[in-house]
Length: 178
Image (tube, rainbow, N blue to C red; front, top):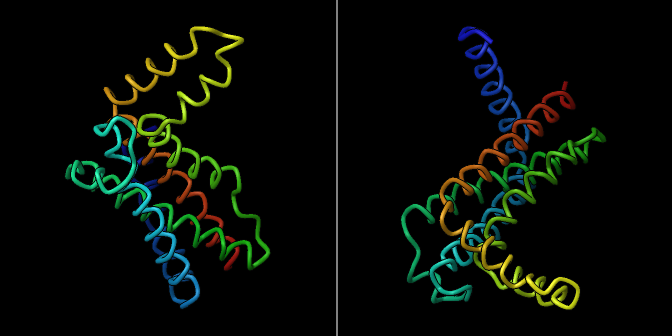
């Protein structure tokens, strides 16, 4: 792909986001949906992302260890989820086919990293299969270690998945509104 084609594609995607945002967020109901989704997910991310440093404990202790990087990821990812949910709700209301695959991928991509690195999810899953596979506890620790070591890269990947999902849903909004 040439630089000109990349520039055109990027310009088209930005225009699609802009049109979809003006269509969807011009209505009070979707601004409220977006705001409520943002608050819920920002709270979720602000409490779960720092849990890497708390031994997996989630609560007020997480906020004491919140770094500017994690706070930034929390806000960006919550904003993207809010946009995805609002775009999807609008598209479904119009009877269009919201991209459920990209919405699901975006949602899973945004929720899975904090759950894997920062919660007792992996040890619980390992404990449930330890009778069948005795090394399961070692595997969960390894995965949590990788998640903690490459936290910024993993969160960047999750953010890019959310951008992709939001872009697909923005295209759906503009197609439904024509």
